[in-house]
Amino acid sequence: MLDTLRKCMLISIVGSIGVCSALAAPAHPAVQGRNLPVEIFPVLDLPVSVHEALLVEAEKGYVVRMSLSNSTASKVMGVRYSLAVIDSTNTPLPVASRTEGFSLPPYVKKTFTFKTPIAFKPKGGDRLVLMLEQTISQEWIWDVLNAKEALAAYAKGDYSVVPTVLRVANQVDARPGLKVMPMLRR
Image 1 (spheres, rainbow, N blue to C red):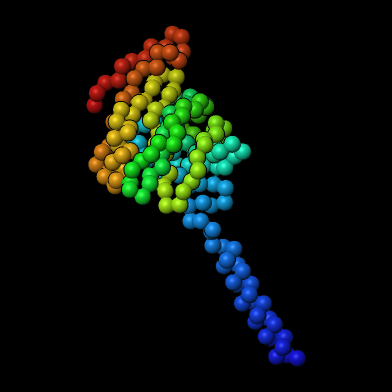
Image 2 (cartoon, rainbow, N blue to C red):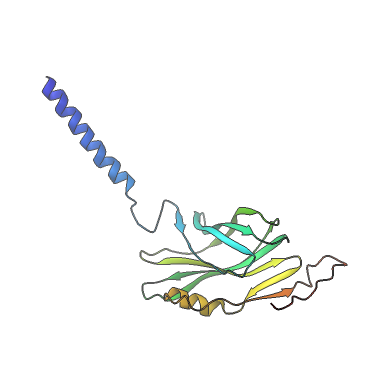
């Protein structure tokens, strides 16, 4: 009787380990539940940095969730970003290019979920990459000039193409009476 009990316990332990390991292994390495991880192509000269990015499955496609931080003394009012998929030949294929408005106070990190759905069907082996192309504050607009070229080089593993950022005065959204001084070159 004691031997039978030991055998039953051993079988249940071994069986539960097998079941637990089967549950712990993801069904598809790129898909984690209903979220798709997104690689971030950093643009260091922009005042906003993306720390995390995910595509979250919604009713009509995917929505973008990203964690942004503002490193300026100005409130950031929005960004424009590009989302691309990099296939097995290291070629970036555009998925979406969006401009999103929000309010990010100075020197704050915050997570946003943008509700505009993206129609996208993930394939195994493809990588998703997100790149900020523009940042808008009340006083300034920062624009990436060579975004497509830098992203294409990044996809191929060439990190020597650095995105060039141009900062210009935001004359549309500036507060009345605010004089924006031109930036002096370093």
